[in-house]
Image 1 (tube, rainbow, N blue to C red):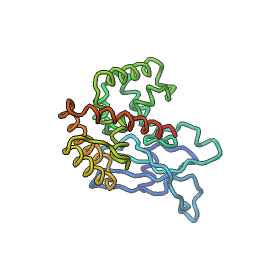
Image 2 (cartoon, rainbow, N blue to C red):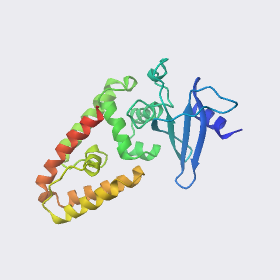
Image 3 (cartoon, one colour):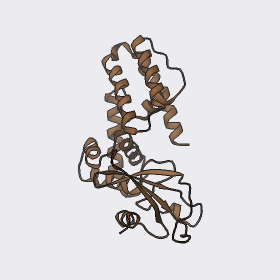
Length: 242
């Protein structure tokens, strides 16, 4: 059986979707499936530029990514197929549903991350979508629970969690950040330079944790800097809704 046919069965694809090619990275343990809706030409799928990439449920120990372009017409783009995601999102409907199932089963937030092998930033996106009521199948009770937990966490902790997009916006932005401590100035300058060159989400999370730990260690001396994070958070939320 060919790799594409095997992957098609594992992902439970539905017509007119098909797999044009599969790429497996053994070193990083990643599986990339490139989807197409075009008809084969002499046994080969037509060339397609895959516009979107979504993280899907793992296939075994391999992190699985779906590459596809959503059709502009025909109603396909509006169907919540498990192996596809929404425009502008980083996860498939199937992964979101798996997270919801785990939360409804009583698992904690970090337990879900460990079980499904996803990083906290991606889990935060799904959790935020649940609290905003974007998943009708999640139920009002679970959405209210997620919203209440987020409100309690924000009230209990002045420094944002690792998965908060404010850190990514801070490190990806060229906008000046006024730091009174020399150590923070140097750390931010170095991390911002490195951040732009990082391709791995895991590597970015490591850099975020390093900056966040500095804020935690010097929280009493960084009142002004912590207040500035609110500005970067509002910018991150504005970008996410565009």
